[in-house]
Length: 155
Image (cartoon, rainbow, N blue to C red):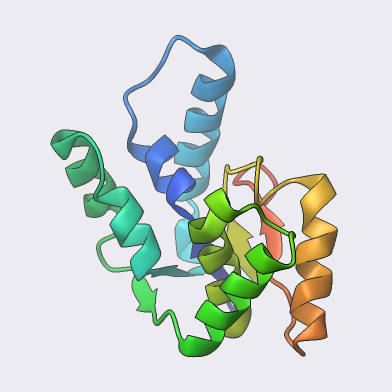
């Protein structure tokens, strides 16, 4: 059975960004490109929130990000996902400025996605936050997606 992966916006940003001189970011870009070459092993999903974020900013960069999303199934941000996302913020699991991040988490959880792939280590792939996200999902009767970076998701 093919594993399902929700691609969060930071992944397509690293994938399509111009290489940088910052060695840490450059490493993330390279790891993302290497993971992307193996993406056929997985069934990929995004949400409209990913498209909204990817379309912002510099038009040329946005076009590259949106181009990378072509052919990926778009999940509906359901009323249940919106309610869960708001709950993650209202309960303090995620800060108010991370509402879109909570939408990514909630959409993946509500749709039963196996993995949430992200480079957002401030609000999503954060060891101090992951457990609270997982407990919130389980409290709603949902199996949480395994939150990871491209470096961690190798099958």
